[in-house]
Length: 313
Image (cartoon, rainbow, N blue to C red):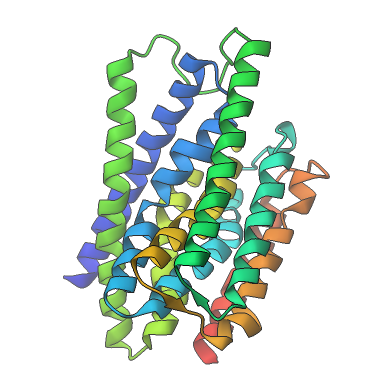
């Protein structure tokens, strides 16, 4: 039955991801807000809900390694896997969208996170610092949205959006997406964890790999649907926004619940892999390159290599 539950969780994730994309792009159309900003906030926070639930639960249960491994592993998976697999399905035309500001914010969040990790523990002081960074990010997104509405009062035309869709239907899509994603992820995570224990894997490895991949499934499901609908701004914005929220919001909140000690192994390897994966986005952000199938193969292969190293270490 554990494999049936895993399959059911994946199906729920795909359907909920599709609903969230539909709702988000229609919100952007109706409010005159760029789809990129919507994906950086509503979509990104919604798809990060499983990471938040898992990390807080892990902190309360006294297994902080899973909480930290979940976030670090999920951020690595978001770049290498969540952008790699959709690129195998359809070319993501990220060159058409300017994500430089949000990308710099993501790198700043990564540097802040690593710097605080070297304190040896994410306590309430570190938690408040991370949440302050999240507040700054949200303020910038809100400011940019207001500026866009003033400069362009005409609603932005977003491919796949329905200008005649009623508000009640948009809200239903958002609710289905935001509720369905954590439910599907919970099914998939529980099943994957049980399968991992059947094969004798440690909790830290589970956190960095299976739990991280499981909690990244909402981002993957949403990004796959966005790529199929040729909404690259939603796809890339979802990954960047989700990574920022993982680092600033999830660990920030979890650190207020209970202190999270930092395993030295994270300082030696996993945090730098996470930062290196983030730097791989430079060609797509600054050189305005599309994420094609060659890049999809490369990113996916790098993630497989990373998981192989973690499993054999």
